[in-house]
Image (cartoon, rainbow, N blue to C red; front, side):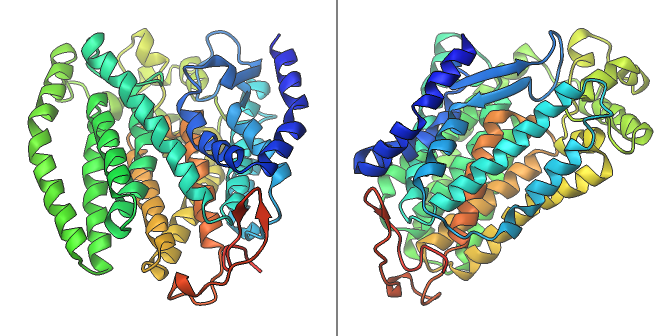
Length: 455
């Protein structure tokens, strides 16, 4: 049944591509849907189909050869977009990391399961490349962000019902776990915060999105999500202030301070309810530290890696959790180390970890370097927002492995694609966007600007 559904959808690819290419309204709906889709994949099964699945009981960060709605939309976009020469060097770390991870497949205990992770990262690179090509159109990043904003608003509706209707201490929204919502929210918050502080248009909309994200963060009752959000907001105000203080920035800073004071009691109540149900016992038993010790033991014994998606299998097979002093209950011995970098190092070895660092660093450096050069332009503010979002997500990943979940990976790939696409634009005058000359290259009614398309 699943295969038949996939084949039917694939047969509709070219007709859909022709319709999207022809009609302005469909073009905009298409890119808004592209940005929103990852937020609904967990709650709508047909948006994410497993063609090949892992064995029952297998624990990992991916559970099959999966085809999602975002993959399909990326294929449709491939047929409708003109060529946009984003430098292939930007994507080289993605290719290298995927290739290094693939070398561990033959030696893994279950090569098929190891291939699932490689498939996921290959899809991520494809999505990022398609979004980079699409962002030659100046309107596309804003359409994608609008979709992400609508997705986070749906998460807030679900979270409010879970918190006040169902009595959840930690609301996951439409995802399976609150940490997924907390991680993805970073990628929405900071671009909109930079737009609020640096652009005069869309003030009410940007403020509404920011408030929505902050409420979602609060309802997760995740210490990591809330703590790193505070750090990220502080970093945002510092970066914006360095570009030059304005009345708008100072007014926003004052409002942020007032909002923080107003939300303080609600924050206290949310965390009080969480710790009433699950009190902190880290002074007696530090579970994260025990997980880290187990991961370090595996890494020392398998310096070339145990294979993608094989962390928990190796942990259980060789009793590493017991050796590391992890409490021996079913949840703990099936858990994954709460540090994405340790997890990647254990599964892909030192070479994989180094290439993973490069994969993360290239879009981060591109966002901050080009964003700072264009800080007087709207594009510059967007890039600085993307860079801040990535930096905070990377820091948060020191305490979570959730960065490898497919929904987070998709949103990350979209942000990376927007970063590469915008950074690859060329302007006749780098100091002023108003001096660019319009080009007549169009898809639907979205138009390349003079500087939107690299020559």
